[in-house]
Image 1 (cartoon, rainbow, N blue to C red):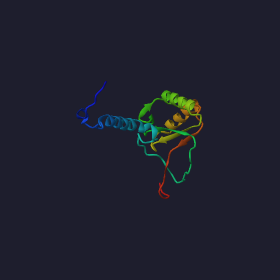
Image 2: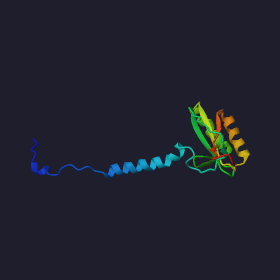
Image 3: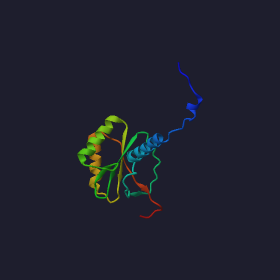
Image 4: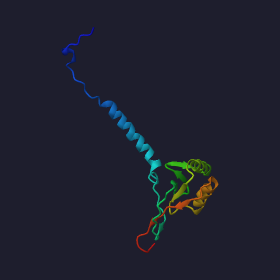
Length: 142
């Protein structure tokens, strides 16, 4: 038979915060690491071409952004890709998302051949919806 004494239970339970802080720090690090692949264009800065046309396109498809820097190099997030890697990536994404929409975020000084090469990779991967990112001009000048 058990006998409980009040003097043994003097200490009240205390919340232990350290495991909760560890979990929160892990979640913070996790979201910082994956933010580059979730938010298009956040990882690599480009200077896109300008246009006077306004676009109010609302994409109802799954958008994927490929960045072309001014030297004609391809990036998905921060990862630099070759033509074959880009083609494999787009094929895999096309299998995963039938309604894939490719957005090319190219620097205005990128070689035209680099844009054509990205479009070739998309075509070979079966992606038919392709858009070019541009920013709106202020005024009518260049």
